[in-house]
Amino acid sequence: MTSSKSDSELVNDFLNGDEKAFNMLALRYQEKIYWHARRMTGNHLDADDIVQQVLLVIYNKLKSFNFQSSLYTWIFKITSTRSLNFIKSKKIKNIISFEQTGELINSSDNDIIAGIDSRDKIERVQSLLKNIPTRQRQVFVLRNFDEMSYEEISKITGKSIGALKSSYFHAFNKLKELMKNYE
Amino acid sequence: MNDEERIIRYFDNDLSDIERSTFEADLKTNTEFKKLFDEFLGLNNLLGESKKVEYSDPNYFINIVPRFRQRKIKVSRYFSIPNLGFALTIILLLVMSYILVSTDLIFNGGNQITISEISEELADSDIDEILRYMDGENESYNLDQLTINYFENDLNELDELINQIPETEFNSLADAASNDISFDISAEEADKIFEELINKNFRNEVKL
Image 1 (cartoon, each protein chain N blue to C red):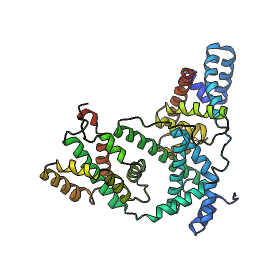
Image 2: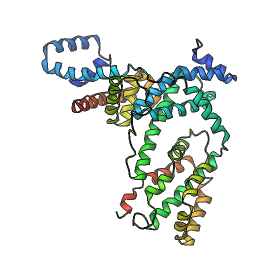
Image 3: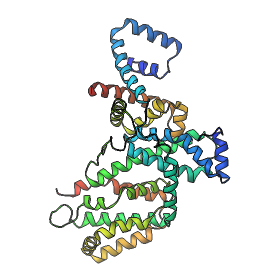
Image 4: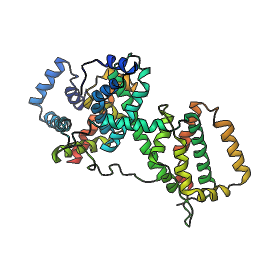
């Protein structure tokens, strides 16, 4: 079930009462939302939760979307903010409860990745990403995995391009050091 | 520009043509540089391979929208009172913090309640809802769910704790909360209060 309509056409259809247009938009972006969230949080269950939250926000706020940026950038801004908030809420919960609530409750449980080799690589990457500061991780994921330009990332994060390049450099360098230790 | 930066910019396609030519020449002649490059290349390859994914559950993405629709129907059934919900949540947090800090009952053994126990009474979803509201993105807030979760589980224990607060102090706290905080509070003030609460280091106040 795909649609050849553009994002703006689907948005307009949805705002005119066509609920199926929203489904089309969700289908178009859900996988990208999922993977951004998964790389940020480090596990499937949290990413799954964030996808549902993001869809709800998009559904409720689409009427205020004014096409000043692309829908893609707007959705990633929501996804990225949600992911950061999710991580923050987990940290707060840990502070309140004085305990480390399982980072990976059991990452294999309910996972959707096929193949041990593939799952192992993804878990290695998640493990590395978890060890860099959250804001650097955000920039790194947006740039390296979501393949966004620095201009787009700047719109999402509100940071200057110079600062983003610096964050990306530090993240990449730290990941390389972590990988050396990991092996 | 140091070697690490050159390599990262190389992978990021951020080198000029001249810089790229110099870079590739250095790779052939400078063994230390080549060694460093290979370390980055190993990471870059791993990142690239992790992007190629096959799914064990082919229906997972197909089911996302139907699950969203179901969830949305459930959410819309609840009565939403976001402003009141937020205000009362702040009051609840204030009262709980006051009880925990001022009564010196925490972590002293016996039958007394601990911060950890109380925090466990707040479901993940409640904490998330509070944070989402703080971010101004909460679409609906079901206060009843929060209060029922908390009070039904430990009503007696909470009553006991509240009874140990001097009445005058409790009344002034309640007055302050209801008069000054619940409805006239600005978003900035609410943020500040919430930040203070969550950043409060209870560990320093508790003799373990």
